[in-house]
Image 1 (cartoon, rainbow, N blue to C red):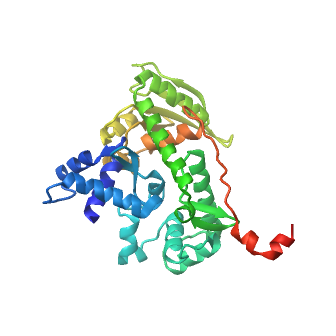
Image 2: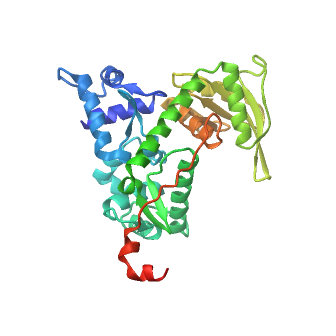
Image 3: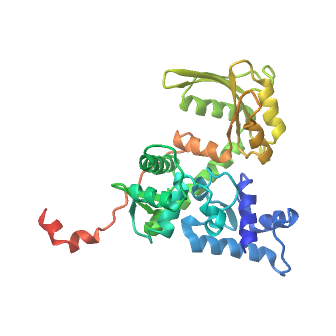
Length: 352
């Protein structure tokens, strides 16, 4: 099943919409990511993904996005965004090379909690110590513990602002994996939010091109752009929006933005065309409802180019729309949990 689930993960990562088991199977076979001689391969694909979700919960790379539909678990993928390879965490955990390849702070935190903490909360400073001692974390900074705490805290806050459930929970410096402490109600809320996010993407996909440009313009203003405006339909070499991003009232970056309300992935030539349209001192930003091919991502970061091109795919677009409450509202639910130790500890009772 390893090849099947890894292939499904690749396919769903490249898709901007949830897919059925039949659609995943079709791509698995056509792209030769999986081979089978079974009589019911569609059922095998569906069963494999359902089993993975049930077994690993929030640790699964997959989520149920509707009846018979599957999508990538973006919470889980968040931890992999800083990887230098496309291998999974599991593969890296089980290989000798994983002991020699430094992981990101978030990946180290997850690995320490899974392999060393044994489902017990652990302080982020202790997590950092274990990560360094095992060779998983390499940091040139003077305070790696502070960096670890800051990255975990920032990640949790980012998930909250996007209406997603973080895989980490932190209390007075002690970090846990939420899959160990999550309640059925929290999981229902998380699934509800994922369904709303998908519906938001569907609504965006149904916008007219000019209205999609207006939406992106409004988002960019929320993100800190000034003097932002749409360009004329045929007057600026494919650039749709222009503006200035102010950073800490000190640095002003002129940005030229191209937007594409597409289902298919953006390819390298589109990035090249955007870069060729930039004027002196302009930076480029490409926003799409779909995603970017491997070649497009490489082109955006090409070292011999005069500037990088920033990329916002469909998932990041929805993240930011949710963050700035464009098209959605975000309600905060504070769930009460009984503290058993309070009643077991006579000293704590006496203190009241």
